[in-house]
Length: 117
Image (cartoon, rainbow, N blue to C red):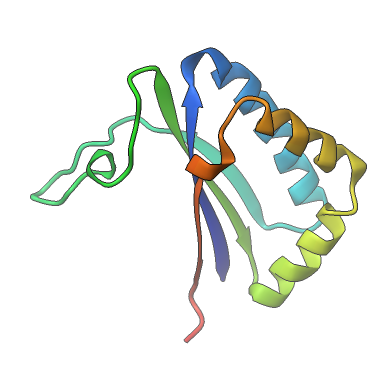
């Protein structure tokens, strides 16, 4: 499996717009072959069991919410194929423009993970 994760910092006044945009984008990802595409709102950013919390490693302003996005694919090749299709969709380009109006992309954290050895 291959997954792409995103950590978003979203100002509270933009939360509804952000979740609407992500919901629409998720439909596009899924219709083009992504296995899963979910966005989660942070519930507790503090660490447990002696571990650091996410709040200890990312910056968060008082007027912001943290969201975790995850897209899942069979493998990297599947990811690349799906993304090539997604990036041709004119609606995804509009959604990207919309999201850049409400969040600072330089504050988004992203990473990829794989189960392949």
